[in-house]
Length: 380
Image (cartoon, rainbow, N blue to C red; front, side):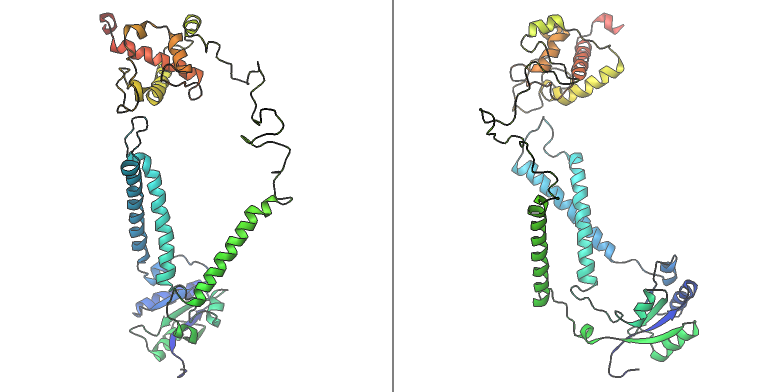
């Protein structure tokens, strides 16, 4: 034993996976508690052989995850209910199902980042980066093609001669003591160490400078600018070429976009009612899609049954009922026209709903009208 140094552990080198597996079992069987096994790659079954207990790191992850979920929900509740209670389409101010994805993401983010931080700072005593095993011949061997075991000197059953004899008895190829180095002994965790803070500042400044250079300079140099500099006009930017100063131009008069026939009766509801006929059959598919679209776009104002009982809490004028004699006597073309171009305070939905879907909504409205105004003949 070296009397001038403090002993950390006694190490043993083994040549095969079977030998290190047997060594781990023998160490546990001998009653040693403070020991570790090192292999150049994961050895299946080693955790069981070492009788490794569950790491307390999981409790940190659980606590941080729960904290993240609570903070996310409180933030969204405070924002949506207390600070900015906007009524959107009559929906609840705090729709929990819609907030689950955000809550999940914040939970995972805080749990993962916080757990790694706790592992580095608490378990690894960051910014300490030294360990008695580092840079030892033992570590070099177990990082290459050997298998090693160490029993630490603070184990309750530790005895220098007994541990050395124990390793030799279970077949170790070599046994060597490992001592603390001066850096390890002198280290005291201090996140505010000037050297550490200086290192962090240098890293932060370097990363910021490189990021700025990459995003603001490098990406605009040839050949990394990806053709950003072209003879073109950016959307919504002013133009010196056209007299009106606008870069965005109206389509050439009379042109028709592919698969997008223009609506011919935008200026005449009477002509639309006279000329247009619902081309769809009344079947389950059209009624189901019409119901979905109606509930999405129409029901916030007209309610789910077309009675005009809006869910907007008075923030928008209530529309008339769809079951009045006037509306029921309208032809399908007029309903389609109103959905397409809007009416009074009702906006146009031609951009949000396809032509077929508008006809499916008309079909569903007819079903609602017939259901809510059923005759004796319909009941048979």
